[in-house]
Length: 173
Image (cartoon, rainbow, N blue to C red; front, side, top):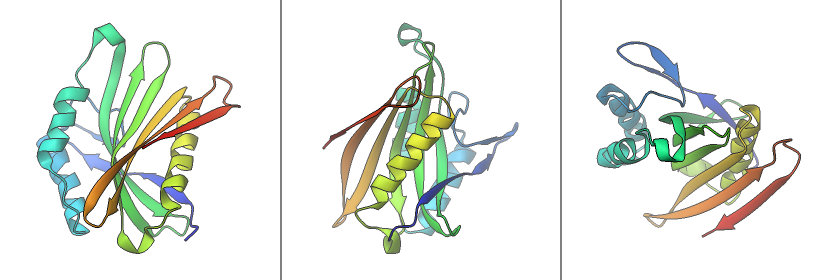
């Protein structure tokens, strides 16, 4: 299936205000976690709530020694070009003082009928576009694919030059 992916920002209601996608405050609220869990459960995908909390606790707090100024976990809904829901991604986003940024996909769930060997490549392309649009210099995506009930983690590093003209892609398994 060659449908290109469209990253759609999903609004999550919070007690104080509504935000879209990434750059949340320092942690997810319990309400945010419940919304994410419900969306995954709808498609029979189990995700450990403690894992989300672990990422919240270990990745998001400020670290002045590495120059982190803003970071957050976001949730994306993935649609085909025909606006058909194909999956979800749980993301972690950080902006550094030196203008470099890291954008990680912690979990990727593709609805079974859309799974094929090209889907990850398409998602990487869309992440790359998002990084360029947001003027990120570095993008790191962690893709998880389900194989016979087990999750394999693949790491892709995409380095985007300051002029956004040269791209070096390195794949590590």
